[in-house]
Length: 52
Image (tube, rainbow, N blue to C red; front, side, top):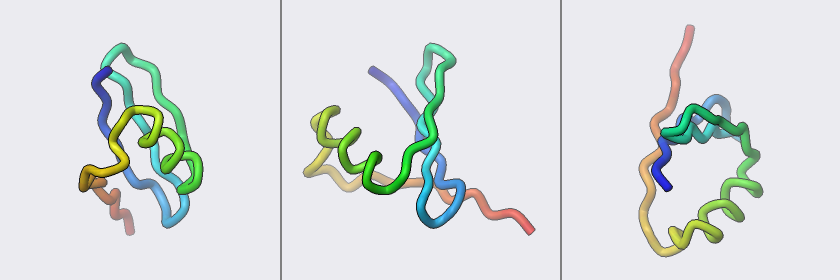
């Protein structure tokens, strides 16, 4: 399953799936999601959305 991540604030990240769905997860939910995806040992780069 392919997805992109975008940090929207210090405790929330949006996950955008390539089929058009998205979810907003807290840091704890993100950790669980990454464990389920088998990415717990991978350094994952989260793009930070910076707005004024």
